[in-house]
Length: 403
Image 1 (cartoon, one colour):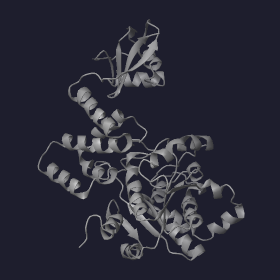
Image 2: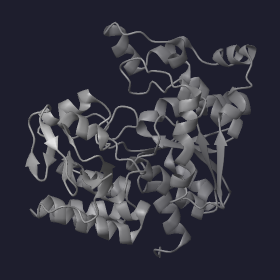
Image 3: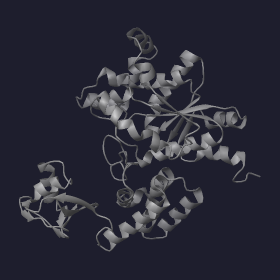
Image 4: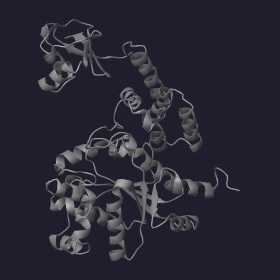
């Protein structure tokens, strides 16, 4: 009999929960796990944004299960490959990142990842360790291990060719660079989103060619927008809910998600048990208000990154501001000189907008309120006074404090 805490149950969960497919097949990996042979498993992440987002959670939960089974976990930070940019799913040429921007972006990655993984058992590597030292001769030899036809036949490249969009050779060889990371790490398995399958399979081929070794590829599903079919959360194309966001903002953004993704987010952005997910599905089908289920989802996700206390406070804040239309309990105060000024200037001085054009756009979108009243004229002169509350969008509030 398989009990919840048995080794068999833990292996079954590691092979199925939050996982899409396993290559070459699940049975081969299951056999190794049951033999208690210890594997090296890695997940690579390019720091193309200043924070991970909540859809990265599934990767970390999957790795944690393997970690608890005693396997070695490596987090590979693609600080070199981030400067090239993974073309996966991109229908336009990616803008390369400067090295200083990459360094700035990855500043908090480690602490965010260790909110879920065991700090004593997690190894961090950076692919600049080897790629900065690589010679042109070696890179050319590596390129000889894969054909141009195989790389260029990728769906996104074909779309760009038909649209007349350019494709750089740096983008074309990106899968080769990611694939060689597997060789350096001598990994037994690589984990990534289903959109990364091509890149990971290139790594599998390279390990076979160079190391004469089998590599498993584990994919997890991607959350997609129910209407557009595009990736719901992306570091570079927008829509992401970042782990670095304050608890109340994270909670509010989750509450703003489409009802259609509630179940997928429970499955991939939390680590609740399967019974909880089934219960949510049944309640949704029975006609329960999706808002109730989203509030449970928001609570679970915020709790992971900010703790239960902050999650409760965020829930109470959301109730107060968005359901009862009251002001937040703690509003950030900004010291400014008490004098009349145009609304677009006031927004910039209060740190609510970075430019006059952004200020103007938000006002014209009816997204700015002063003391609860919508403002429609960006040029309106506001006579600032102590205690005045300015709202910018749904979640950003500032209170004026005398300078």
